[in-house]
Image 1: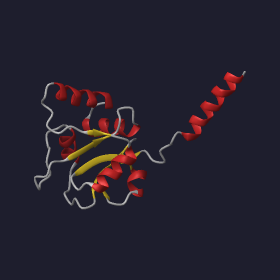
Image 2: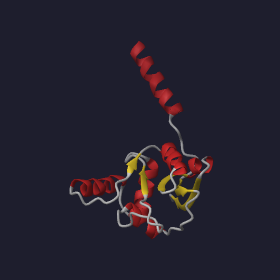
Image 3: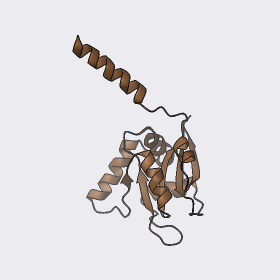
Image 4: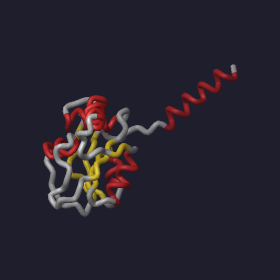
Length: 146
């Protein structure tokens, strides 16, 4: 009986502690000092490893969320036309074959927003809610999951 109570307690705790997105909007962010405008095609080319530097010549610091992230799935499907797992596999294959020019850094959304706020050459994507709470970032593109 004690084990059953522990399981119920753990399950309830997980339900309460699991963050729920207040919005289905995912946004692409850059540092607020970065004034470069990007189209959806530009963002796809950056995350497809076709564009590796900003117009200024500075190498782009690229951030991804983990493959099991809801925002990565939305981003991958809407921007890259792939599932999150397919996009990760594509990058992994390029890494293995030594053809990856600009590897991404994988971290949670809040860390992505914090890093983009600190690094003028960074780009990432997070939920709109997180981006709006972080100073030092600029939203350059909004993806709405419909």
